[in-house]
Image (cartoon, helix red, strand yellow):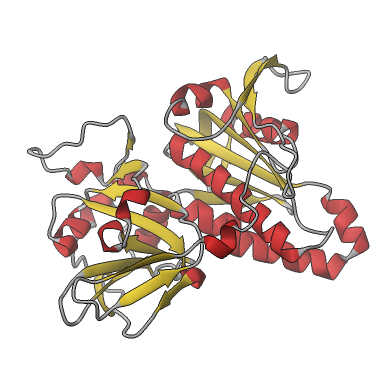
Length: 349
């Protein structure tokens, strides 16, 4: 069995049994939608992987602590906005815990202290809130914009050693939880962008899911630059106004969109083992790219030796991405050494 250090996110629906008893079919339908359109989308856009469903809860693994916490914030924000839109007392409210610790990979499952602590932290979090361990806090301090109160050392279970706990605390607002939305935030959210000649223009009516730099050889080749800045949005929120991009399959796992007239690079979407529910836009194609600062570096194994960005953002390899590993493995290329521009799946006889 493989042992490794991993960031673990645990989430659970508050009062799920009561919601089911009042409206079984409606609650289960909401849970399915929550998993598909919020939890899995946010996890995959932050390059993590859901490795277990516990009925009304989910466990996900990340190589980056910052991406795990950014994912937790994104899930709570999307859930709170959806609860406000639904205007019902039966909205699904989540608790989330994030830990960093040693885990054991056992087939498709992950076990160990890192998983156990994440689950204990999730149970301690307020409805609509997030709880993290002191180890996680040390990694994200000054790098993630989230208000976390020092709750001291707590024994999460009678058999556990004490853990330093930090938690968000609820605010008196319409949504509850630790978030403080402007009342008309969704109505005012409109991101615009397009190519250099203006033929392909788009609008996005939802907040970004995640941002970053990518140094991988595929992004370099397609964008023609040493590094590519990207911003991910829910694909359901993206609308092309007149012409749509032309798409090119740069690898067996993804397609990239560009303007057929001026050649400007615009989009990226994974299509294996399934099409993702998010669309990655080249940040440089946004009308206001200054509003979408990258939060991580990925594909660092391909970084040009003569180019560097002097920041303290986390740096991960392409092989560290659970989403990329799943995608490449699905086309018969699990070895990261085989990944790259125009890679071909092995023939199956």
